Length: 300
Image (cartoon, rainbow, N blue to C red; front, side, top):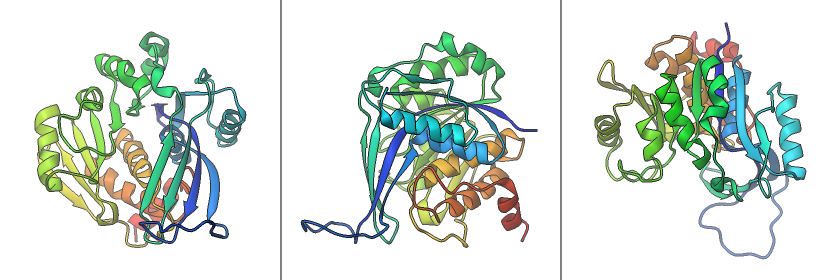
């Protein structure tokens, strides 16, 4: 039986550009044939598409403008069977991003959020969605601050990804870390070893599950119920084309299996496979496989 999951997060139009390497030397023009691509993406989009590909029923909430980019996003989401009734056309213009990536998979992201950080969601308008959902994925964007507090108050399973942290006391992400049952983040920019930092997070916020993405090294899991750290290696069969969206894929697929009732460790073992398959595609919002492909790898 499929889960019903509320996803509230950013939608944007993303352009990826293949570069020779970092740092980028100046030259007036380059011709990266088939190296410049544009797709519908954004964290909310990536998670919604990933969960839908895995068979879940997504309730999507977000903001866009009243422009061509918004039309493109709406059309693309609906073509994937994702309802857009909760996507509000209230922004001055739709967010866009440009992502530079090199042959080693390193990336540099330029994300223009337009005026989305000035908007908020009235939690009362989401009561019905929260009541009917099995879990709420609430991305770390301003309009979700009050919503994640309400979801926690309603004892709804809450999940968020704060991406990059340099301190446990991060002001911007505190609301999200304090109210998340499931907390994801990356190991980029950590002030100390990964195992030490994840222990600090657990001591400060007492999340049920914390997962730290380690890039090519896989992921690190802290399950509070068992009070132990587990390292899960990256999928060895992964072909790296573009790592953009890998973290969203890991997050989404973990949640999918965890909500189904799998243990945190078993969920993460499947999630690294899902993310490993996804990075074989060029774009954050494409390359999502189904359960059958994951199980075929797990059961080898």
